Length: 127
Image (cartoon, rainbow, N blue to C red; front, side, top):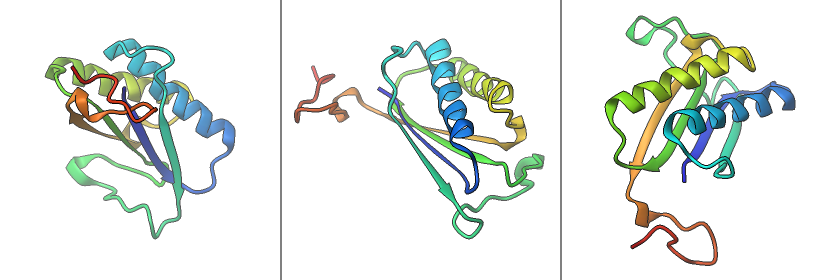
């Protein structure tokens, strides 16, 4: 059920973007137990005028390799599970495609299950 939006600077190769998407998905499968087939992602590339970030907010040294990841998902996970997800995404992205952990920005947006439709105009998770 997660919807993942990933924003990054223009100029990456398709292989880099695929590895980025796959690593984020793999981390979600491993830490929050989403089904393997539950992969819905939007990757967008932006020039320097349309992807803005602070290079030192909270004492973290970011580069132009920064990726902004926003995950919309069902509410209800513990703080410990969220922390594990953040750590696993950063570790996976370090492995492939080789993104520095300082350049991994993640935001979770929680919603109720009944707010999803996966097709056919139905609310599949509504009870």
